[in-house]
Length: 184
Image (cartoon, rainbow, N blue to C red; front, side, top):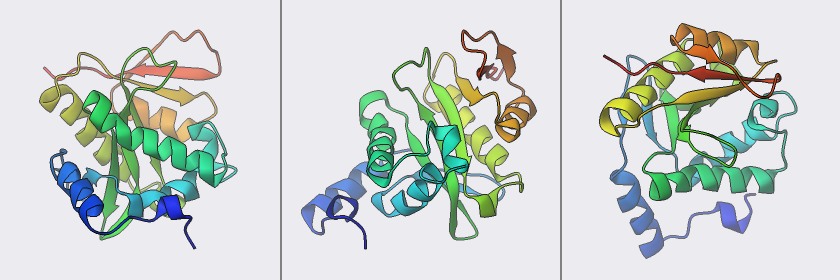
């Protein structure tokens, strides 16, 4: 059973949340739909962030309450910065998330992705990341974007390469920084 802070409050508060969410960008790719993340997406987020292996890419694994704080910060980034977390839908299921985030320690906006194990290896992360990158550069006018990827995360590092990003020097040898190219 979800904790009280994980449960939407019906009525005016839920209507306001829906109105704010409806103003945020949505994107469709060949196989995915990126939509603003909602409270109902948190279980999947926690599944990833709390997992001993999968959570490492998000600085974890973390406990469920810390995962909620991270989730809330990523979603709240929309109000503070005009970009944030999208839920990635595939065939009616929540496959994972992409984000344009900016957290303490970041030097510039970060394009990030994390998916459930069941949805990895299908090219969905690439489709979603390309769509989020296009929104960031073309719709939001961001001057730059990078992806911060742990050196051990071979799948995400390979994806950054496939996205055409260039690896740039990092002060931390355990963290790879990938600069995304602006579209012409």
